[in-house]
Image 1 (tube, helix red, strand yellow):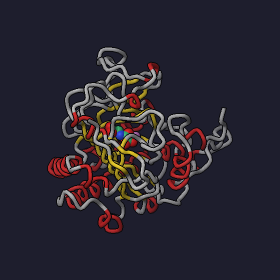
Image 2: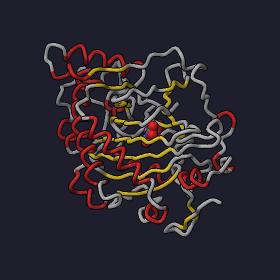
Image 3: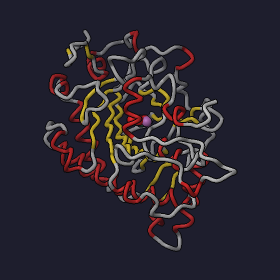
Image 4: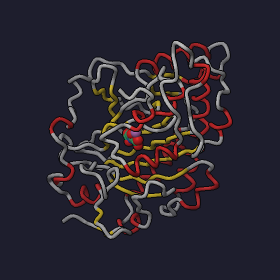
Length: 357
Ligand code: OGA
Ligand code: NI
């Protein structure tokens, strides 16, 4: 039996977790993807040969060795819009505690989680399933809690009060990712030939949305997905995963599995960096596969300029030969877009491009 709950809007809500716990042998029809959109799960097909970049950040703080790290970042951004980082300064206990708090949150009884349910993308703290359970034509095998996270003191009181450790543990991880994001944006600005301090204040005061995702074990992973192909609106997304599941699209339009590396964090370029760099860097298109055996957790920390602050191509990267290829947009513009449009039909970044053809 599916466990369903009425949400505040009165419509039915079934979490992926409830389906997994009930032991369904097949995914319900609404999760079944059209054949052309189904994932290839075998690691040997189209995914074997590519080595995705892993960058050791410890030398970022050494003035002599910093240029070589910046160069590695530049190469990774140009080739993939993606890299993993090690020695990133976030301790393994902070990471472990955050994952532990998230596990406990998703293990709570459905009624408790439903206290935070919302399909309004403007709600600062909200629990949900799929992308938007009330409008998705195909559903995705994913539950989530998303919350605004910076500045922490402004939002933390609205975060889940169960499990009792959630605020402290996830709060520590959020603060640590904010610091890391600042360091990475400095490096990315430098790699583009901009000042290290480019947009420093806006980045420091920027918004941060922590999407805590849970992808329960799925009975039919070959016909469903945890998230559809998309790019993030953010400047950067810092992603922590508990096991493999993320795939990115490479330049040849092949899906590449991102390996799980113990202790590493994933960095993905978002639409804000694509616009800021005037297209020198591109945001990475990614999707999430699910698997039969384990529940997978991820923390996607989406950083951006403040809610209403528009990002536009850096003037230093615009000239007669390379005119501005994008208009400007803010996080708020993105929210307006997704509240009215289906992201699986058209990417948001395509609406910001000047030449739409
Ligand atoms: C996201 C996202 C990837 C993952 O939340 O935007 O792409 O592995 N998550 O959960
Ligand atoms: Ni994403």
